[in-house]
Image 1 (tube, rainbow, N blue to C red):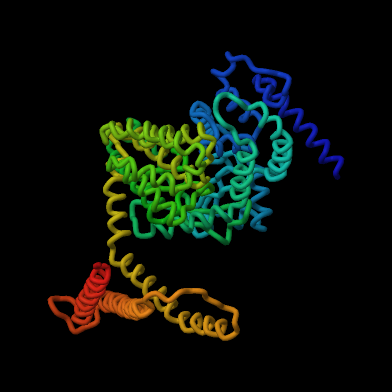
Image 2 (cartoon, rainbow, N blue to C red):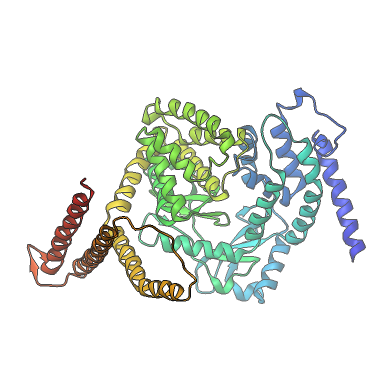
Length: 545
């Protein structure tokens, strides 16, 4: 068996080498061979054609690379994006065999009808339209035969080539071949398990359950396995096709463009979970302006910290606040090397000065993101994966919007959304309530731990394990200050408790009421205010000379 695998690997390596040689790309893995300057111009196209010919693994690698503008120059990204819709389907009989084996039943029992020609083909799978026995129309996504075995073999070969790639990929920008392979492995492992994509659909459906202009396919879990995904069939039109003459009067392109941006903003800044590959083939529209999200194999996650700083960066751009935008980038972890920090700051300032001088209606997110990414690459910085996916998602959504509505400007949609988000996070009732709870909880923990900590100090003093050397200068004053500080802490705890308690009363609407509000809640807030002012006044007085 080992010998058979070695032979397959040898044959596949020769095939890869032959394709690279065919397109003049063999200098990547032949250290002795050097390329001519004239070969740079058509290098992106040659790479795309070579990836297409090498099959599913390399097509998927190209598709994933097309989402990473921090790995490749813009010309390569543009060319690799063409890989999204250029995959030939595999044999239909094989697809039916896989369905029957995975679901452990003949197709005649699983479906009332099953169309033998696929409605879509991708690098890892293809999709068929079928009807269930109860009359429901579904889309059945089937994994390509032996695709995992093929990918595993190709990954072994790619891993062997990493050393050559690291030495020979040079053209004025920085490459990270080992990181590229790591990112690819992580992404491909998720996409090879269709149950993960099914879970992604469920999360998206839950997040958009209250928005009627968004459709996310329902998953039929009893007919879903790692290699077969059965979901609701949504019959729509690709988002960029709705402006065709035959659809005139059926769709509302301006509304679709605006909603597409609003959906992305919600996913990123409210949910922290977003569709990371919203290219046109994955976004359908139902008349007149309902948006359906398909193919959830690639998604992004953002923690609260990243969401907050990304929003801060966007607001800084929209409010023309350079310092706020750069501060947000620092907190996002983009500015990480002190040695380069001054030069990097200068480059970013120069870039932001340019954008700050651009009228807001003419500001292009895609151009801004691309320029920022070029600066990070120039300084040999690699962005967090999900942050890059977020940037890419914004760029694709902006591009989709402008293709169906020439007047579309994503900033005009983003600005009120981001401003409302900031107001909610800083001054919203729920947020203030949570902050109050945290302050109260921390204060209670401090009060609970104080007796034990104080007791430990006493025991150490008695055992001679804790010793102090000090000179007595004004100990009476120190004692008074300690007593005063203790009183302030106690008062602060009472104020925090009043705020939390009053908030609960207001939220639960506990009577009696005055002017339409619970009396106890209003009284508690007023008492907390007066006590807080008293604490502040005592602090200011104690600071007087």
